[in-house]
Each structure stands twice: as C-alpha cells, then as structure tokens.
Length: 346
Image (cartoon, rainbow, N blue to C red):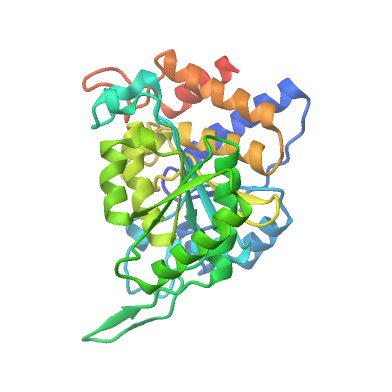
C-alpha cells in the first residue's frame, strides 16, 4: 500500500475498506503493508523510492498506489523528485504495459465536455508501453540546449503489442496501433513490428495504424470506433489523459501496470491534487476501480473484480457523486461517503 502524497492517503483508505468488505463476503484474507513513495519518502529518507519500499513491493502479490507529487517538491532542477520514485518502481518491477480502461458511465455523461450521444457505448482499453521511449532515454541539458533521446527495441515493442492483442482477442478483436511513422524512426520500427507480429500470431484480430495527431482528434470525434489502442510511452501518457474526458473526470479512471508475471502496480490515473488534499472531497472511485483491476490481473479473482466494479457503478447510479462529478451547485458526496456507498452496494 503506497499512499504517496496529497489525496493519496484518503483515496487508498477507501479502496482498502472496499477490499476488506469484499474479503468478508468471499472468505478471503488480504494482508496490507504500507510504505513510503514520492514526496513523503523524500521528506523521510531523501529518496523518492527507498530501498525498503522496493523490497516490500518485490515481496508483495500486488501494489496499490495513490498518487505522488505536489508543489513542495515541484522544483524541476531538484536532484530528487517524487515522480522519479514511480518511474523507478515501474522499471524495477519490469512493468512494461499500462492498461487504462475508458468506459463512460451512463449516469454521468453530462459531466463530460463531450456531447452525450457520442459517449454512449464507448468502451476503450488503452495499452501504453511503460518502460521505454523518451522518458527513459539519454538526457542532457546545458545553458543553451537540451535533448531527450527516444529509443525502442523490437523486443520492447513486441511484448506490449502481444499483450494488447491478447486483450483485443478477449474483447471485440480490433486493435488500433498509434504512432508517428510519418516523422519518427522509432515509430517506423513500431509499425514494422506490428505488421510482423499481428498477422502471424493474431490473425483473428483486425488492426489499423493511426497517426497520433489523428488519434487525438478521433478519440473525441468517434470514440465508439475504438476497442483496444496500443501506443508508445509518451503518446499513451497524453492520449489517456485526453480520453479521461470521455468519462467526465479523471476521478473515474483506474489503471494497471503489468509485466510478464502476475504482480502489478495499480493506481488511479489522476494526480495527487494537493489543492484539495485533507478536505475529504477527493473522488475515490478510480482508486477503488484500480483495486478491482488488482483483483482481476494479479490475484486472478475475476468474480470479485466484477462485484467491485458493479458496486462502484451502483454507487454512481444511486447519486453518490463526489464534487468532480456533481452538477454545478448540487450537493456532493465526501470521499468517505462515496466509499460508504460502494460498501452499501457490496
């Protein structure tokens, strides 16, 4: 359990409560062990990912994380920054694929800035490559210039494309690969790998190539046309934040970071929201839904995952809307009250 910074402790507490209630219902026993990461870890140890935290994560069946960062640690020239802890953890655990489902809830379509008729029936799974690309390439800066190297190997592309194709095979059998092959050599390699792997290994999955700028437009113009999207690290980072607006709020979107084995890292896609930290108004649903993904992918408890997802859906249908989802001027639910609504639904 890595609460992290800002609202992290508030939202992960509600996920723990939901998991404990679910454990009672199904006769399970979950053991939770807390540890520091991000700004809280910097304050306590001087490092964003202490050795003790990494050791605990290596021993755990899964990791549930809140969020990291905040103004206190926002100096871009600082030697240690909170986000480094998250990047280091993903790399150390070899978590190469980030799964971000986007399924707008019918009860809160009006919370999205996108027209409601475009959102009905949208069900997208974005698979973002997580440990390669420009975020991890060689970096250098002087007073007058800087560079960040974007580098990918064929093997890095192959493994995330295969994972995305397996997901597509279990859904609507359609895969969209997003790149910038008209400009970037890394994208040309990406496209070549996709064209080699998919027809040979997944002939039952249809696929298309879409340039990232076109994908950004089509996500808003025709979101129902997408099933599974697979893309490189930076493009995925940007597109999934855009896609969150289809659901109406970052507070509704979970994520799973997976590697070759069952252990994964699960977290909401939103940040630490320091402006509302401590006020008890943060939306816990994305974190609770991340816990559902934890049940599905790491613990192989599919029925329990579906129960938890259904409970969140029922809570929303009942009108348990935190401030980010409630209509302007309407009363909203606190973090705890939203968690209570999920427990009641369970």
